[in-house]
Image (cartoon, rainbow, N blue to C red; front, side, top):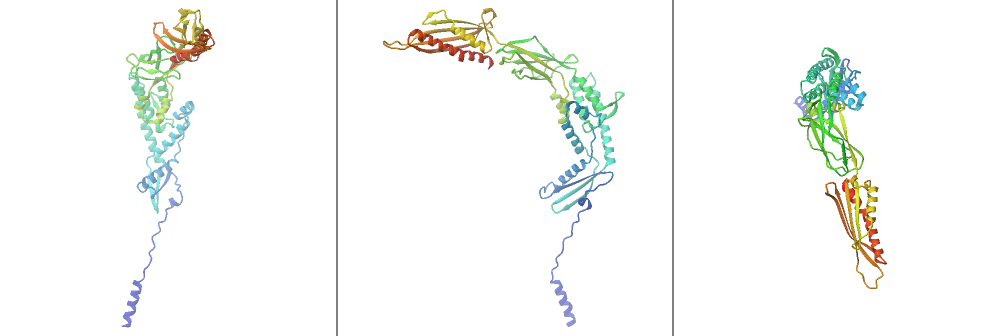
Length: 451
């Protein structure tokens, strides 16, 4: 009996004891502990925080690993490359550096997953890329791109194609080579050995140089305040009128408005200037061809767009020679309804015009505009025994052009003069009228031309 109780007691004692089970330790692999260096391979390690990115930590870690891998792929810029040529000419150093980084980031193929590791909130990814395999893939891709580029270039160089089609093919030929523009791209084309990127740029320059514009019309001579209508510009390619082409029109002084959207069947593009509002003697508008639609049809790549737009095309400037009007001034200046041989208001007007850049002329035949001044005074109420006398002046100014059309008019009433006698009050009223002409009427007249 005692022999049975002892083992049972021992068994119950054992079963009643709780033992703490330790969790297995997740040992980090060697590539997590030390960044791996493997001969003949590019290596990329990426990490993401699962708590911060619970839905996308895997993709984020993979992206980080690829980016890390890409930093090891060096891109050398060949002296015969488009990159170096355009950097020398236009200083696109920053854009080229950015594009080189994009090239390394975006055009990676043939990499393989070498491992993953999870520890608490950390998720690790290990990629590796065989350098020899990478180079083989790149060379194959480059060869395919060059062959396709040469096909586009053939279409671009075909003079039987329309200019717009040729332009688009030139851009497409360059765009397809974007991942390889830092390479020399040495190849055979048109039975000669060429650096393909430079060949495209050179041919494209010759092509766009055949786009020409010219102003069709007489020398533009216009008076300030007038309209300049129907300024016609013709666009040609290889001396043939080109239709459906947009133009860029600009001026730092003139308000230029496009009358046309594109060139017509005769290659004509029309703009107008509603009103010349500056007295500057020579005012220019600048004209260039707007290739934006053609570029957008060719590529969506911003780097290629900027590269193409940097290549200079034909531009012209069209001057307008602006003059201020010659003005012939006459006046009828009455004193209390009586004609007087007086021209003080006429002289005030002429002096104010000259100060503001307009020209008062003495010969009516030389005039562009004709200013007429009519004035008259009337006596104020007279009371017996008063010591001060009042005179009121009414003034009308009217300006007509050579077609007898009124271009400006103004009227001032009851300009007051007060003095010890009625004649002095009359003179005082005329003095006030002179000040109004010099300070208000003539400036308003001049401003009517520039606003």
